[in-house]
Image (cartoon, rainbow, N blue to C red; front, side):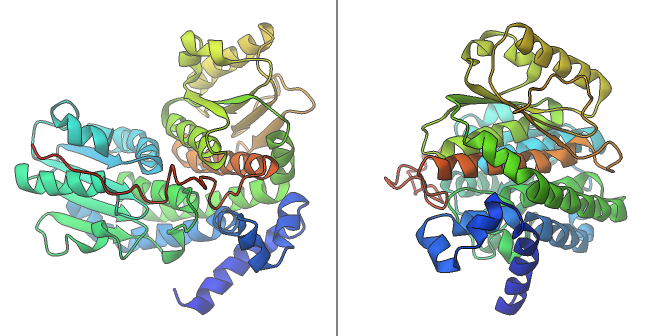
Amino acid sequence: MSSTSDDVAKNSALEPLTDTKELGALLGVPRQQQLARGYGLTLEEIAQQPVVWPETASRMVQRAHDLTACLAGVEAVVLTGSGSSQYASECIAPALHARLGLPVAAQPAGTILTHPEICLPPSDAALLVSVARSGNSPESRAVVDWLLEARPGVRHLFVTCNKDGALATSYKGVQGASSVVLPDETNDESLVMTSSFTSLVLAGLVLGVLDALDAYEARARALSQVATHVLVHRSDALASVARSGFGSAIYLGSGYRLGAAREAALKMMEMNAGKVATLAESFLGLRHGPMSIVKDDTLVVAFLSSEAVARAYEMDLLHELRRKNIGGRRVIVGAGVPHEVETRPDDVVVDVGADAPLGDEDLSLVDAVVGQLLAFFHCLGSGFRPDSPSDDGIITRVVSDFEIHRR
């Protein structure tokens, strides 16, 4: 996009937020001061998501023919990434597994490097989908290079936000390798991934609905409307929760939503320089040993499934936490959140509405936005800088190069 169109996109993303209390106050500060205070990039990148999602969907639809060719004749699909990109893969994989009629798995790039024999399909009739913001992570590049040499029959699809990254530029002309670069504005400049994460998830979901592209674009537009509603009407309440002084935070999700829970937990940890203990777990998994982490001051963030049986189990767990009188404030996200969910006056419910044409795989994007806002406001309330919370350089926007050991 040109700088002029970039400015238009930014203005259309930020304008609805100027009347909100919390976000409006932050946006009311001159741009250079926002950057000096260390939150301008992250705020903009969170806020732009309702604008960039329809653009991302359109980009993927334009490449539908190429994507169909990538899948033709494959017997298995593996999605891979590192860090947030891996969690994006975990949001995408369940939807593709359900729709493609093929084995689909999300495997960390690091695991493929160290233990390929336990995480790659035995047949070379497979598609490896590398999901990445920068496309420059050492393990992502190393996985591709090794597979091209050791298993040349495996196909590759690179989905990245960076047109100048290694995944987008280094494999042009390589047989069996294709790349899709998302709109420039998805290539977040902040240390943490926000709009890049959700856009990568949305982009990957198209692989399961290449026969229903109109519906896919309609879902992207519906998600845009839902995210705008969350930012405009629920951000103040989420800011209040984020600044409430909790000692730890747990994020609960089932099936399609577990990857989003893991990403939301990572956002709270990253943006707060590791000062907040976080855990991501399934609702049923929490019942076992992990429940020991839930204290009176633990923030409980629950991504409530739309599927009836899964929701019944999830509701049981939430009721159990109340019976045991453990856990602090709650944030509950779902479509048509039932009235019987036990809430207290200071809890927050983010209900996208039962009539929204969205499945749980779509709602993982909304979950991520809620997680981003909680982490962002807690970061500011704790005196950190969301754009660069790791001032000591322990973590960086792109992992530094490290030695790749050859097999």
